[in-house]
Amino acid sequence: MTAKKKDIRALTKEQLRAFFVKQGDKAFRGNQVYEWLWQKSAHHFEDMTNISKETRQMLEDHFVINHIKVDNMQRSNDGTVKNAVRLHDGLIVESVLIPTATRTTACVSSQVGCSLDCKFCATARLKRMRNLNPDEIYDQVVAIDNQSRLYHNRPLSNIVFMGMGEPLMNYNNVIKAIDKITSPEGLGMSPKRITVSTSGVPKMIKKMADDDVKFNLAVSLHSAIDDVRTSIMPFNETFPLKDLKESLEYWYEKTKRKISYEYVVWKGINDSQKDIDAFVKFCKYVPCKVNIIEYNPIDDGHFQQATNEALENYINTLEKNRIVVNVRRSRGKDIDAACGQLANKS
Ligand code: SAH
Image (tube, rainbow, N blue to C red; front, side, top):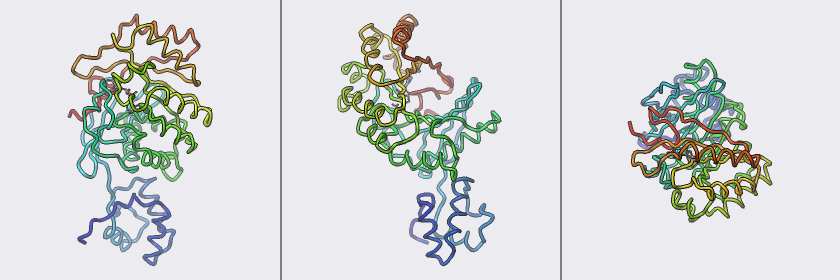
């Protein structure tokens, strides 16, 4: 065959059924193959043991199964595992397994590199090369689920879209991947255990609300003052806080689900009382909870974790205003697997 073979996993179940009918076979054969491709994550047509040899050969002639490959796995001394994941075209993304006493969380990537330019994030320094396909997102989850079973004797419990990339800039593929992850024909996970984290693309937040998605939303806020936010997250110029606020109100109106704000406190950047007060005010727009994330330094030293005193001040003020605050200790720092450190170093 000279023509480039198509990735069979780009087909929907209906398309696969139709393909078999066109080949003079039964539509049901499509269901069987679909099950192999998704639920059983088969990497080769020859693994599909309930499909005849001739049919497998016919599939081989028409299609490929593009699979990710975990190229390099690093284990932190806190149990965190970072995977360098090779895509079919040779590009690499990273995904992370984060174990705690009761959960295993997969932190997955949605793009190769990132189109945004957050000054404090290592991924922002990589050019955005392309969006990940739904199957490439799905495969990261499967790989981490397998690692969770192997190292922790339990299945994966949670997924966060906090790896490389801005998920809402690859919305359609992220949604398709989540559909597969939550479908009984895929991994059958509850959408309540999935969180999509965005730096805040108002138009897409509204679209998610309209689409009635069932997963959780986290917004990387880091500042509730436009000038400050624009200085550390320059796209805030295009999507200012006023628009973000409006989209979050719309989200809550439609979904009635709380939003999480991700927030890092930096010395001299957002650690003053004025910053805290603006954040508290922002937190009152819609029901929310706050995750204060420890800063993970990325080489140049411009950004520094605020003092404990400044952090305490944030936490106390938020709590006084009855806002739920969690402080997230970093995991996997020793292997550059923590938030904002994913940059294909190895
Ligand atoms: N683009 C999405 C998801 C990827 S970033 C988003 O912005 O939400 C995942 C989280 O890590 C975000 O909350 C981001 O603000 C945070 N982050 C980025 N760089 C960081 C760093 N150096 N230290 C701590 N958190 C960081």
